Image (cartoon, rainbow, N blue to C red; front, top):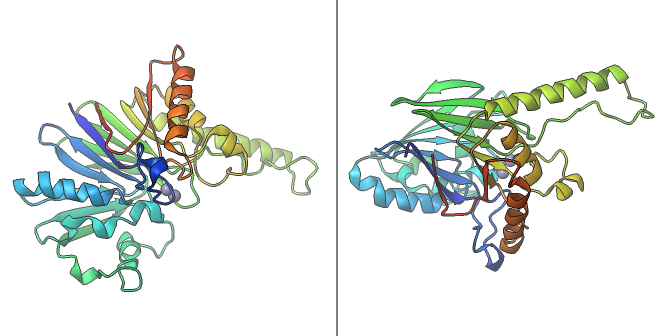
Length: 308
Ligand SMILES: [Zn+2]
Ligand SMILES: [Zn+2]
């Protein structure tokens, strides 16, 4: 085992606990990544799932020595950061945490965004109460050496604010994340009878979108594991969700297949998708993929462990 992944939160937008989400879970985005025999810990996103991950880290990592880890944020929408104050190791003086992520506005920094919610207005905990050593790194596209044979490459995806897809490479194995995102589309594609119609612009817009989508597919090329946004069915996507920054199950499967991905995990579930609906979707998708691709496809659920 080179890479081990465990899901602690799989939902998008808002936590949705209740009788309809018992199987897949109601917490928002949080992944635990472990690399190598030493089980080096890297955390992806700080949605509400991070609260339970914190308990796990306190039980399994803390007894072995101080926690020194990295937290990668895909972006800073609420559902991806709202669990941050519940990551208990940040209150322990020996903890060292490096937080990485993209920002959208010139004057933004990650520490300002995260600490913006640590005021009495929103939480009973304030910045001064975090006893650990936390460093912040604003990321753009590029590749970074994280030490001990672990590398990470970042790529901008398509969402209303800057979102980074991540590609972790460790001793020949690759894990990629692609959320929150939707396919790039032609922004000049208006009906021919519209006053702003420009045939040349439509053609250029089409080529630009195609080029961006090809770059994204290239980014996932040969991944052993890909965790991809699948908030909607294709039907739901077409019914008013275009431009919301999320993908359909069908799009995720097509992209992953095109990139030669080995295991695809569909992720960032819509809060309205019940266990029964997700079970049905998984059966449908597996049937559609069987015979067409060697790729394994699963719908991510809390507690699920995937290895490469
Ligand atoms: Zn989200
Ligand atoms: Zn988002």
